[in-house]
Length: 447
Ligand SMILES: Cc1ncc(COP(=O)(O)O)c(C=O)c1O
Image: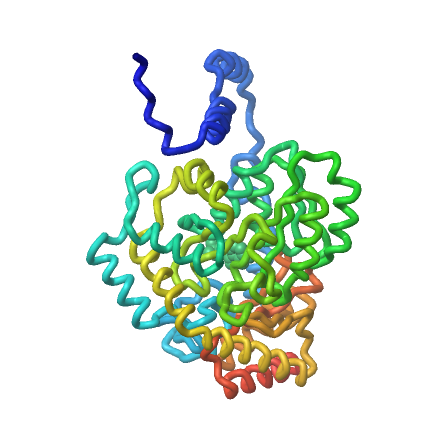
């Protein structure tokens, strides 16, 4: 009597077939490899110097030119500042205290005694590293507990947590979509979305920022030419501090039968009465989108990313997404820290209200000073648009001299005329700090 085979990681037959066909695709024919090596060997020609000089790699010269101009202007280098404590509403750099707008510790949970205590306890119990892929060598209870807590918090069937927010978008989008598919993303989508789309091999197009009507028009003509279509939007845009009209995008998803991924990196803990993000803000059910992506590095104060959604797909990703399967599990103290943050967020939703109050107040103060705040909704992100990369660099440098730490953003991250400073608020920013800052920006711009 034939023995019954152990099921492959508990996957269904349909999933096993998909996994097997992907493995098949990845195999290289050894005979083909032989032929191509043979073809290359005799034709070794001198290689032009520009192809072997690291300084001639694409973009390196532009980078050097920008650094040169900035130092000629005497601008302080705004990057790689060394913070000597926990960056929050204030921070210490080079022994000096600054009002700080350069991190995503939105709810001031990084450094919260309960968060630090749970991370320390996890180190004592499990050590500092998961050491290997969870699927291959096993996980810690904290991994499952964190994923369950996030799924319950958001109201999805399941959730899988990975070691990086950026890698989560890359691997999930790259893994689920292919060359007969179409990916349409907001023009201001995060780099991780673009990288995921590139990896997938799908046709990738952007639609103008927040413009659901343009998306509708694109889908009207393009939808019939592709198998699957993925639309990607963010809950709150980190460059502009504005957000999409999600009900419109959800309706378009229904009408054109697309998938919808909402990147909530900046909206969880920020939007919605209890910080559950853009769906809560609009009172929409979680079923209005297919994938709810989030990061653990901002509101959840550690490092990692997650995808929450339908149980089947999350389970499929847990067993097959390369960025999960072939990468280490989250380190136990980081998983513990984020788990405690979810609990704190449920217990203390007033942190979200305080953050939004600070955001609104700063937006109004900046507008009163006549500053260009773009389309900011005054939640947790307020840009001050300066209009040139050099202008943004100089303003950031002047503010630094006045004891204010804020990051400039310039081309190619945004168009040159959209170069700006980005102010990230946290729930502990005080009215006095915000008033001082708005005045200092106006003064520095005038000088
Ligand atoms: C919209 C968005 N998605 C994804 C990421 C990546 O997250 P992480 O920095 O945690 O890797 C970021 C990072 O800032 C982001 O802004």
